[in-house]
Amino acid sequence: MSLSEQRPAAAADEGRAGRRVPLWVAIVACSVPMFMVALDNLVVSTALHTLAVDLEASTEDLQWFVNAYVLSFSCLLMTGAAVGDRFGRRRVFVLGIVLFTLASVGCGLATTSGELIAARAAQGVGAAAVMPLSLTLLSHAVPDRLRGLALGLWSAVSGLAVAMGPVVGGAVLEGLDWQWIFWINVPVCVVAIPLALFALRESSLEGAGIDLVGMVLAAAGLFAVVWGIVHGEPDGWTSTGVLTAFAAGAVLLAVFVAWERRTKDPMLPIDFYRVRSFTLTNVVSAAMYFGVFGSIFLLSQYLQITPPRTPLEAGVRTLAWTLMPMFVAPVAGALTDRIGGGRLMAFGLLLQGAGLAWINLVAGTDTPYGHLVAPMVVAGIGMGFVFAPTAAVVLASVSRDHAGKASGANTTVREVGGALGIAVLSTIFVAHGGTATPQQFVDGLHPAIWAGVAVVLVGAVCALGIPQPSRQEPEPPRADGSPAAGAGPRPTADTASAAVPGAAHRR
Image (cartoon, rainbow, N blue to C red; front, side, top):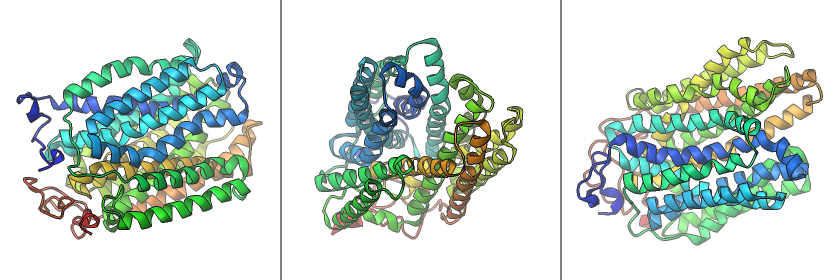
């Protein structure tokens, strides 16, 4: 039996003399590092103007302060999960925290744009190990009956990071220097590393190899695609560089798929995508992040322009929206097995679409903030109903052995979806308006948000196609095709095809 299968009924490590770890400690140990890396994905955006002055950064430099992190993070998520499967998930998780923190120190010490860009790229590498493995380790630390609640709490912390990004960035800039945006990661690391070593049990995928060719192909293909996405709006979607990047990405990813079908130890078993619940949940994730994060990107600027506000003032006003998942996600997680993740995701996306449409209908050059609060709350509640069920359905769609790979694949899809949403909605915004005056901003905002609403509603329709859970279905088989030992009844999102993952390993 592999280490990953020796899972206790609660968050306890049998290898530590029977010492039991409280469930809430395991949840905190997984969630705190994830909060740190999710926060840094957003917090730098509020400091761009200050960085432009202090580092004499060009507009292209400012883009790379954000994109260097996004590129390395999104392109290496599946690699981080695969390395954890091979060398130990807790070990790689902790090493990711260490790398992320050292890179944060490098960001804080940077005196030139080049130094900051390099350190941000290193942050993304560390984050790519932390994010997918935090979910995998949490899945292995809790009993099945509490998995939905635990994933809901994990999702609430993720939502809190989204909420606090603009607020923390604005507060640091007003009270301290921009370097403290990165220095605050150091004390978090000091707490997170010993907590992870104490509370989380080591696990790995026995006999797992390293698919070096797959890693290179996936990272290179995703890099090309994401590079094209982030340069689509500033360079033009039909520019030579962008079209070349998309073409190269398509070729590399096609070769990656062909390689994964024939290799003995695939980094991402392609048979995952024969599972309807897994495939549709990934589509839902991409649609949600496309529509919602693209819209938030523009609405956070709208709150600074009409009327003029500081980044902190605007960030605080977004909390009516972004804090809602913190309260809703635990409830949604607890309801996932009872109601079905697909139904909850569809309901959440419907609320998000309604909230975005409502905001768009009332947003003008002189709209009082009070008129925006109710639709922001509705949109935020919708986010909470999507976050937790997404994680639960993805993990239930594959065997426990493959939880890391599935988590890495889903996180990659949502990051690419978010980057694409920001790029596409920004393009629509620029085509119809601008930032010179409040009226120009509103003129560009409206068509861009309507595009976001349309994509979110498409995601809601896709969510309705996710099969309902079957409480009597046993856990999908292990990678070698043999039945899962001692797993017991376990809800699964797709009864007909849950046994597919692992077939590629039998070839």
